[in-house]
Length: 201
Image (spheres, rainbow, N blue to C red):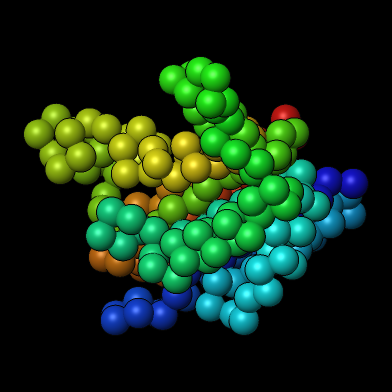
């Protein structure tokens, strides 16, 4: 049985109600619940958090799925606090033991002290920006993808713990383009992505 830990990084702040990321989490649970081979645990970063329990969820899981909006080209403040607090709790406690270096030769092996080897993670993000902002010459992100640009540090964070990335999914134009028709399309495309991803896990 595959053990899946899903983290909803959405939160209520200013004009954001966190509803879209809850919807994406619901789609994920709906997809996984159709197969009895998956055991699921979830966390919503706005809920009351027990740090040790969260560490244990990371250690327990075969796959961690992160759902997060992107605010000002970063993850939301509560999600960042969640990661800071939980990963710090996981020092020498299941998530990482050190930065991987030794005092004998501190110039090499940085980022190799993780304890979550054998586990994988998948990232979904939601954006106001359209997909073309990342791909068209002269547009804002200078033809740099989500994963190689804004979320590069997030991926390195997970690599630091020893986890391996599987292909993620990015929802674009969620604010201006969140029509009922587009929501249906989002779900169809995301479900297809999950189907393809879980074939290889």
